[in-house]
Amino acid sequence: MAPAPDGCDAELAREPSAFDVLVREIGEDGACEVRAVFWSETSARLKLFGTLALGEHRAKIEREAHSLKSSARSFGYLRLAALALRLERSAATVDDDEFADLLAQMDLAYTTALMQEPQG
Image (cartoon, rainbow, N blue to C red; front, side, top):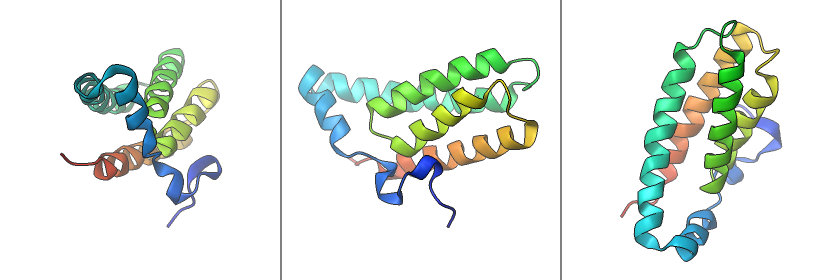
């Protein structure tokens, strides 16, 4: 198993109390609606990354990575947020292979986060 990015332990892939904080702030119905939007937008954003030519869209990649980082952090998905931060910081200089590797890691982090999501 590869080490988690940016020093994140496997145990830190998800901060379970993050959703509880959101529930306290906006209520359970609102939190569930916002979380559903997060999953939908994150899926779309990850697909978008795969369609963008790195040489032509570095600024857009940086902006999208920033948005992903912020939303993942809000829901406590620390590994996904850390990877998005790495992409945000390196968008101007990353090469095609590094970009592809980061996208693969982000897809895995997304899938893992979705699997860790409490059912109910």
